[in-house]
Image (cartoon, rainbow, N blue to C red; front, side, top):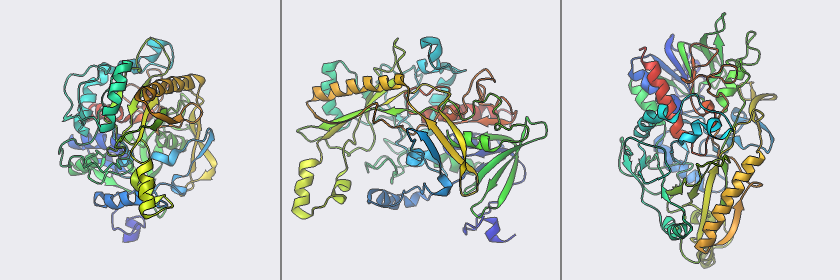
Length: 538
């Protein structure tokens, strides 16, 4: 076989042909796939990881940062085009706005905030009669939350009086409050609102071979210093332990045996369209909240015309996200906006309670308003005129943001659109997503609290992101939900598919509900739990 065929036409000389039958095939190399692959490779399993996107060289991050801040430049993570095509209905869901296909997954460009779900999030139906309960509770996941914080290197402090219980301190010290946080603090104290630190998966001091945060302020979409955690680190650790990682290997479908309860192979295609068949004893699907469901639907067969692992009809359904709510304005004093590219203070004070309205967390934004670079590059003046414009408009912005919970709804779903095809000829994902009036009420409630804070601060309020202008946080969840009953869920409490004995599904697609907390720490905790369970047999 020629080198061109070996590497799928990429031209880099990397062999992308299938391995001989592996113990485990992991589809996806984001945090879920990377952590599972590392744990299993450490346990001695023969692991193959198939990643649809390319490897991005960490040494290239400075160039990607420059690409990001220059107007009109392409997306630094190469999203878009037929490879990433999708369609949507209803509100119009911006699927490609914040996802990445590549080794490391979405952690390549995430903001890096990592909170544990609260106890109520696992028991929403039992406590409030809405949503559904998880088949596990907070206590089941608590030790894996701690392990996930160690794995990601989380900087935090035990200063949140509303947080769920924890048994050990954070691995790294918390980042100190920013200058704008210090401006918010007196106003919040007068209003009786508690501010506390934000756990961040970025180094507040050197850790795990990576430098401490250098304050570039471009955390999303790119961290040039490497201080922010990406799943690349656990992909590398998995490879060091013996796992084989194949990039640019887009899985087209999963194939099952004649009985129909066992996955035999993942069929993947390289960029030149050549298909390869990776056989394995077990499979772990870790391709994200949309692609997990899409791949199962693409794997429909004569025995499973509605899609693989879909006897419940729940594959693709209950698609949920978090909604953004925010209020911003300006002060008559410097706020040092954009000096920190991530949140250092927030409040969970309005998250729990007897009122079953959707949960919310509020965030004190350190990056309200445009950066001086972006404002200068977009200006139509030069020299002293530009300097006067920047003096008049920059450095006084302030805002309170927040995430609001969306309850699961079977009509919010991912399906296939056969009228639009990707670069391999497959139907693209079709997103059906809308907001309930309950969610809109929760956003209004968040706006009221945010507005009260800014008014107490003495800010001139300039904008509001409310129920009619909100957008998703790009936290795709729920499309392969876990549950005890096979007729209403896709996987069980151990993330094993009800219909297939050797398929596990990991990631936010398994969340029965999403709370209002950024999902990555829960993704990591569940992945470590699955990895430990599977490793026991190696």
